[in-house]
Length: 123
Image 1 (cartoon, rainbow, N blue to C red):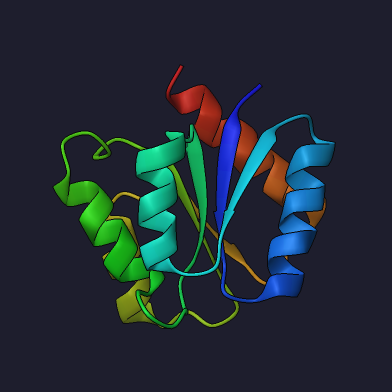
Image 2: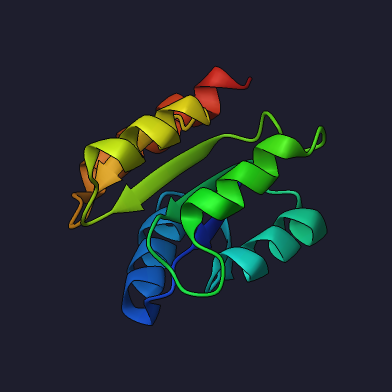
């Protein structure tokens, strides 16, 4: 069973992701923005992060940049989620090494598949 950190500023999306991920048998930690997400990564040591791209305080790109700059979290698998991604943002996310991009609204089956792929890549 993996610990998956869900970082999203929208409470309803966080709740939906929590329900789906927990329903698939994983433990879940939650954060409402990138700054809180970074704290949760340090405190909880998740196996995977589901990261919204567009958030206040510290957005997903900024959080991902900080994760990749830290040797302790450089290889932490991250799946980016967003309802609106431009080409520049997609390129930047890929350059920072996201496992995959999931477009909102997502299907549960697609999310399950992406999570399984990401977790399998680190074991």
